[in-house]
Length: 418
Ligand SMILES: Nc1ncnc2c1ncn2[C@@H]1O[C@H](COP(=O)(O)O)[C@@H](OP(=O)(O)O)[C@H]1O
Ligand SMILES: [Mg+2]
Image 1: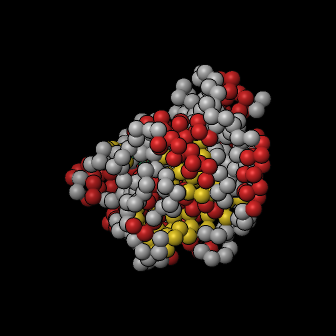
Image 2 (image 1 turned 90 degrees about the horizontal axis):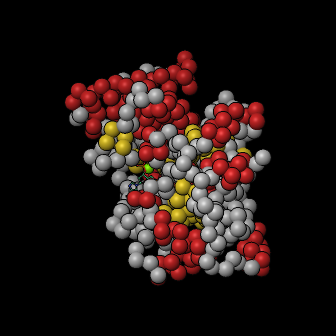
Image 3 (image 1 turned 45 degrees about the vertical axis):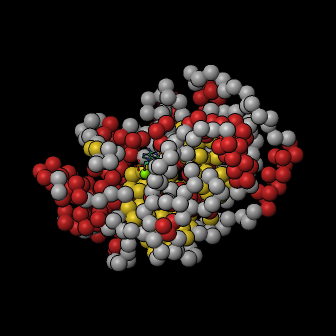
């Protein structure tokens, strides 16, 4: 039985109500299909052309960080480790610091003067007394163990001073110029819950995204198992976990890395380099059929208005319940057409950070999609660490569906209290 059918049968949710707005006529679907067919096909591979070295280094760095994150997530699940709370009350773990350190270290090998806008800084480790020093020791051991695993005899042994310096490379102000952008563990809540998270790295030059690499160590090879149901432990039913653990022998694996280079398309491949599978080009959904369409959004109500997104989905005629997923894995879901639309509408006054979107956005764009704010404007990457000029929220979809999505947003906005 297809997994989608198993999921439908095992779901405890009542069937979704019929859409209140009419579904588009076949003519509209045909028009959208024709519009998407007219868009230029993305290059088949991001590798090999401009930014080849940046892509290679990014992939190497994100692969190492993914290994390290998987180890820490397993420790958290065994309760051998715990998460800490930062001053802004968000969560942080050994993995957030260690992943930022190993990625910054790897980039520095090629470009000693690189600059980076990264989520973490080492203040809590250097100014945090005995506790901070112990955490730094654990991070140093974890980074060195990961380097040894990936680089063998060529692996250096980094000192805790070098680790602190690498983490603090993330303190860049951004703006014009060439900057790497990093969220070492995006979706830390998902991470500590044993669920989805992403290691999201991008390269920006003068406000243009050039390269995106996103490691999604828990993202299944195909989208069906991402179906979210709150009755499942950690978002996965036992049958999903069994399927994922069965691995490639039955056509399944978990752990994907997306790679995109400006103008050269987007691919996905297994996170685990031991699984031999060539990078596969991905493209966004090429036709919008509201009956089968899906949209995705944050799991946490605090991060996005689920009432507003439901209204927009309703305007589009989407009947199915939302796919709620932690982190930028949602952009990956749109890029490979697991979902047709991603929407995030945070509370007024919330300032979005560039590292929460940069990698995901170039991945969707290079898969043939379009990402804008709720007013239809592209995101401003050169404005510093925050997306200060963002209008209300962020939407990602196929280039063909974007205009209709904008209309649906406007319609919902004019009748909403947001
Ligand atoms: N009140 C809020 N509104 C919107 N986004 C928020 C938020 N608080 C935190 N976030 C951001 O939402 C990200 C998680 O995304 P999602 O909700 O899609 O899983 C967090 O990334 P981190 O977990 O890396 O800090 C954080 O940057
Ligand atoms: Mg984040």
